[in-house]
Image 1 (cartoon, rainbow, N blue to C red):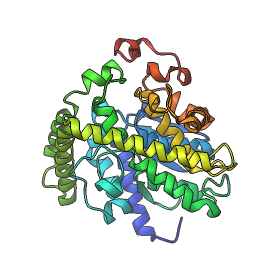
Image 2 (tube, rainbow, N blue to C red):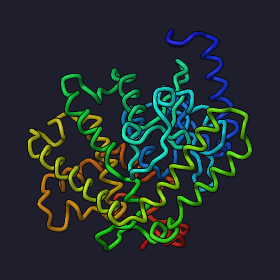
Image 3 (tube, helix red, strand yellow):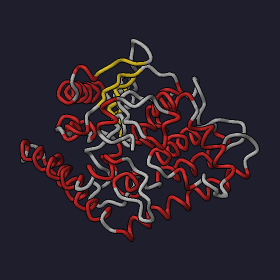
Length: 352
């Protein structure tokens, strides 16, 4: 156990982690992966881009971990024991709760959301780490002896790219329509996600009512989430804001193209594959998945990005931890990287 916390504090956090495991995730979705002695409990969604980043890093590093896959449709991430665990993280203690919605998932820009994924619990030292960027930095630093994804000499460029991916408004492009059309999202996202923010706000209100008054900080986390989801509903219905999200994405891709043109090798930092490439592989796959691959294909002048996209998505850690992840729904625009669509996928309209 790390000396950064005392034995009593470690036991308290360990108890929070135990309660979260027992009261949040059904046993059939708790799986030890990568080895029989997990180093981390990792709470994630199959489809979440933030979860995808963390899984890709875990696979790239070859770590044993306990997969605790939550079901967003059942709103398991709104359960109090899971939120209490997230509230034990440094991010929760150092940041204000997010009450607005800007279409991205960067806590630095939006604030801390106590009701989302991913979250990890380090079984060795009792650390709870929330927010995908912080988690991935943490894992890379902890296991530099296995694979050095963040070489010290390349740190400034890597950090620049990590922040660019973190600022990309992936969430807006998922929940909102393409303001310039045609909408490349699958049928289920175009239709079923209409009104999704209102549904989520109602689900949060129902869960919050069960424990109202028991814990002031928990009450505040629920209240902030309700405000955030209501703000999200207004954002995706606003064509001007959606165009701003798309324009921001285009600008970030244009900068990536310029950076790739300056690189002396196949990766952003030349011959070294780094955490920056892993993040971009996950990001570019998500954009392809949602039908935005045309931003750098189909006659665009992003020649370097076209080749880099194929290279980074084909990375085994991205394929296995993201594109071919068992519960990740299928999408026709990204079909060449994915497993075959199931009958459920087709019935949901994900094949169109």
